[in-house]
Image 1 (tube, rainbow over the protein chains, first blue to last red):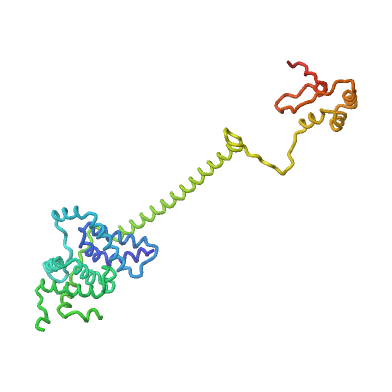
Image 2 (tube, rainbow over the protein chains, first blue to last red; image 1 turned 135 degrees about the vertical axis):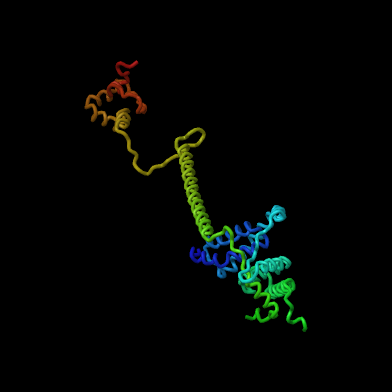
Length: 164
Length: 164
């Protein structure tokens, strides 16, 4: 069983990114419920997992997909009415940059967006991401690279190797 | 890092831009909520555990009472249940009244000796006279029946006085 202080530390470091990860399938309240459930399960587990962060993301993913499937119709109806809250916030630049980035993220495919969130904001290694999404590391890297290129096109950053 | 060396510089730039953004902090989810929920569930598990133990004990108690009542019915020969025969290896305790009555009747040596010891020598002559009527054969007397007025009246076959 995990120590409460250790769990609090782990929560402060990962909760926001986990909610962002769960927001791919759920709304804000549903994502927070799923993240809370993941941490509660971690707290109640008799044996602490080897890689706590990867375990948390994996549990969050499973719970979010399960909840998304169970309430798919209801969620689609509610999402059509209510506007979702901002997913990302920018500390250095303008808030518009964050919205552009969010729009660029939303334009990606599900697997590309999932991998980029896990890699950039989850701070997971490619091998850990491969374990979370059940895919080979090469596939993970390929999707990560493709996703970054899509975002780069959306942001209007010129490719340095385009002359090649 | 090997995975980073394989990225294009432009992709690295996009990656760097994205890392400047941070996920929105959870609006209502706190670490204290997680700890509280985990404690609540742990208490609930313990409650159900004790309820299970109490239920098991109650079932065992009911089963014991049931087995006891079935055994009692067999021992008392209630209804159609065949009575059990109990063979005891210990010497049975025989009450003195029953044995005296049984041993005082008849013409055998033991009965004559007992009568002489109990009532004196005249009792021998009374039964030893060939002209006298034979001594009545007494049957086993139930312990619930009141004892006769005197053993002599019983021996000569007279009804006790005052009885109809």
